[in-house]
Image (tube, rainbow, N blue to C red):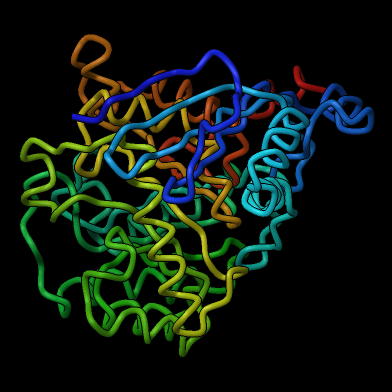
Length: 372
């Protein structure tokens, strides 16, 4: 079990050369208030958007597993870092947190984009069987695009806890006709798959994004494939497999553990030739996490901007919502999904993966208007 200790303030000798260092933006503002604070030097811009942070949690992970945490202003962090010889590390973190995100698959990343879910499966946890026939999946996808989805995520295999694997041939047969029919309709298309053969067929049919729940570890050919195709790719964290991921998952501290994993996967992509502009990450809410892990991740989403690439959040109708409420079935978890999605947007998440596009778009419109 990790020992977690919060310090009252920054002090000399808090860090040493073996520590892993992380920054979690806090004191978030957006719109006119953010721009005024940034102009006055009281806040740092977050991910190049009209959003800023005036505080940050500094986490120091010690070699013995302990985690020290302390809250400070960016100016305070810089002063402390100068005294400790850590200026380069702090400035690198602040630069990654603040730098503008380039367009991802042609979509602007300075505002939240909605990804609509279309599961062409008989057994997905929320809508399994609803859109198994190609014509019904195509109709649903067009409806989601009309409601405001700028990305359509097409999947042919359920990865819910305990799901049964399907063959690559079956998965491909489910998704390719749908993608081919939707190509050129206006929305970007992503293929939700962990198999290189399915990714390749989907890209050939008109998909523009690869969305892999295994972060390109589930198939030995997938990393080389996306690099060769230069395909914008979303790397998600999942502990284990769909069959094993909920078997008592455990972490030292979920946000930092998952950050480290995703950082390694981003570096693997870069080493293979996929540029940072073509990479997004997803902390994988619900995939190998208990309720407390999901809540830790939701409260630490801004941490993941330190990876320097767009962040996708998928919370729609997830099981933890029912566990925190009254055990509602998936299709009755829309209010909880909206609450979690709005928290993601508040923390600067660039893409939200949802089943209920119209409701999400409406919630975003009101929240953005209130923020100015």
